[in-house]
Length: 592
Image (cartoon, rainbow, N blue to C red; front, side, top):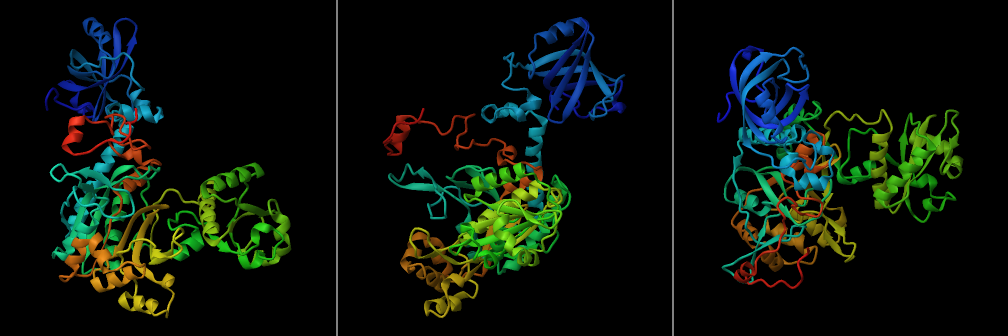
């Protein structure tokens, strides 16, 4: 190893008496009196304490700024005052020489390295190379590497081939905005960065490959969220030929639990088979298609019981949902704050009442529901000491508000959320179609290339008016863990006849399909196998495993919420010569 015989995390009692060479960053210098200093040197592997007792070395140290890289030659000895919290805490090194390898030219740093997570995020991102020196920040990146390696090993053991697909490709409508790349040799035309390798992996199935995967980069011009990075992200992209939904489930149920149990902050993960929940049932019971099954709360419909109430919010055909929280001792102030927070997030006001220790209905909307006490007690199983959250509105809004309230109550009220575990579930039976909010007409609900459950027959029944097209479900599924959607997947619609009929239901014909997806449509006309796949997000998985709330904590060089890399200065203006080569004219003034 250049400049070192050992790392800063390696030396132990068995090395006492040995002459060693270390190299790393000068983390701290603590002078004691005028002739002694304790020095901490840090590298990727750990920290080692130096004890400087030489006046010449002490003078040299005073001229070296913290975070300079140094080389040290010295002798290992046993520490008189041992540090049990440090792996190298039983020894120290007495240096005979210190060499500056890379000088830090600044007396002050933007933030203290070991407390960088407390710094302003803009500063952290601008000086990310310093932020990453913090062992706690670095550990998330190491975890990411370990998880990807474990995933790759598991997929290869399941006979999947790792195949890379193009980064420069054609623009296609996949639900988000494309990043476009001008084609210099083809003026006026553009490549697009892939939102996902979706079409390519299906074409691989058509080409005769049986099992494909890659740790795939994906590019989408969309806004940031806590669990979504703007610009680019990575996913475990996989596809299987001659496969059903259950085949896909079996692979991930075998691959993921051991990885989550081994590398996760919690060592308990759902075992196969994961719970299957129908999409509509998830909305009705949990108020979300991303339920957190660590929470034991759920919503119950009480519309029929309260529809004749004098409370206006329960009238006019509104759906009313109730969430019963046993053993709840929240104060009125806490409940009011909870309701305000739910309203901000859900966009609708929730209500509440409680059954006190005497069995009386009190608080909130008590006067409107007290006449229904007997019916509500029977329906909801009310007991003294319980709080009941109530949501109302059109069905979708009542469900959404209930979902937000369930998550907040689960986190706030002790005993209703087992936080230290990973609970997986599959959301299945998504609707194939919906009525568009803007068009008022039938549109695809999610993935237009999912196989409709029932195939061509069910589409023909809908065309003849024998069934409502809104009742058609798709062989589509989501993988959810702890309330976070890790992935969407589907059994693909590989039959051109079924594909055309599915698109005709939304007023698009064969020519529209050929125009938008020419390669895939033509390939399917040459005999495609039934195939299915999924693509769990790597970034979200590692975020869950690390116990982080923000996805930026597990990405080496993340963008900020505005999709800017403030460390590198991207996006940036370019020279006019570059624009001329690409036949591009700028029609607005660049931002400062």
